[in-house]
Image 1 (cartoon, rainbow, N blue to C red):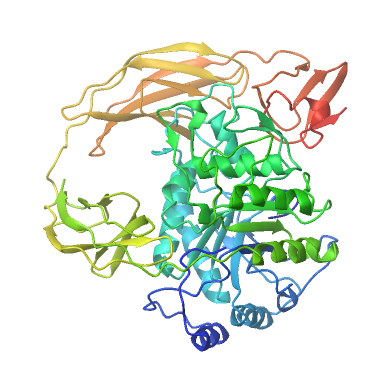
Image 2 (cartoon, rainbow, N blue to C red; image 1 turned 90 degrees about the horizontal axis):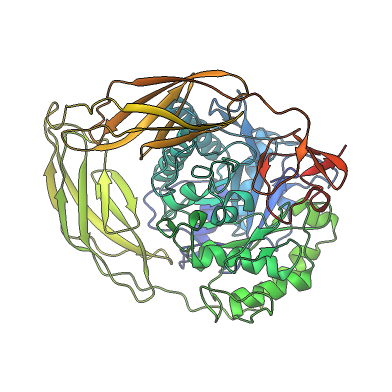
Length: 611
């Protein structure tokens, strides 16, 4: 959460006494087929593991109106990029804290550990950092008996390398390694027993409709950078609660700017996720809609908690539009004009600020959610997938495909089982990797729906991987005719003639100093460089088998930095402490961002400080 901060899929019926026993003793029975549900309309609150003036609350004293309590925060302990995450309960012994977690669980609540926040930037630039992240986070969850993980990465935790333009196939290490880490942690605990949620800012999600950091020369390379993470984990993501606060104006699907603090903003931002949108307005890169039960409104509990506080009346006006289809005069939902009855609910930063504000948020919005007509539980499983076949078998991987299942409501994904392992898929195919050479595997597939119902198993298919040494071992040719087509004080644009390969070139890697960027085409924009500095760029081609070409190197010196503050302009990537002029005054940039029309320095004091 900026300002130090920030319901549940698969509802099923379980015997209450079983839930009570499991919660009290924190037993993790991984053979349990599904998990207990909370309310179908969920209220999420962030609980402070610190005291920032809002007041400290023991976990067991949290308002019972909340269904999900996100403990804030676990943070890096050995630097931003080590991957090592730690958590120490504030004003608690470990035993007392674990007892309070178990107490809340005995009341039917879910308690998640949230990682990040404004002071907890996390970057996973290497596979070693990824593995440290997986190990340390898994240990925290198991030690305290948390029900899941909330990803609250902010600041410079996520960004996109130049040329990383396709959110469906990201190449930037901090993105790729986070996706791998989240799926590994989820697989360790099991999708049906583990909650995965995210709380990004609008800058990292909805801004991706206008700008995408990997494909825009002058953009902040963090713009829309959560999109590949959401896309790659959408089959295991319980919900996303975008922080609809501390935000500049954001363009909605109506191509109009929407500003914080009113129903219009919340409806427009949620509708983007519920409808889907072309990333950077490129029709070839369509970000698909999330399920309504995967979307939660993120709100500050009072004016102390964050910029963009929205009154109870305006929040409920937004919920009327989103859930009941009561359209606003200023914005009409694109995905469904009749509303989204299964819309998940609301989140607040924070539980502590809510108590400070005499429980206005939790009392008012709990009453609203409880008054909604409950939906009929879905207990019907999908049909079993059919015609599972294997193709493209290598020494360590196999690609599977099958015919789609059907469901009375809708299939949300599939799980491929082999031995004691399982891999989730959203479509009707899956690439299974990490297999052993010359080994026989038996694969089956099951379908699942949003309520957590799982189909019977498909037909089984037996596959034997090939021996080591087979396959393509021919590297592509080196890129040629490398040229500088544009440069500035902070960026260089390169182009080259495509390499050739006996099978096919899949992409290129540009290395400079300790940095690298992966691209699929024959051009790349390298940004974030220092002015008047000489860089050596080496470009190598690669193919699907992992063969790497020889490198071609070019030396480039960036332009000198222009003197004095420049006039503020839209669509410029500003860094912290940059100076601009506007209206006869000089302003200092408070936090990195890409400027938009409407974000002029006098209008957004959260971004600019008058000098």
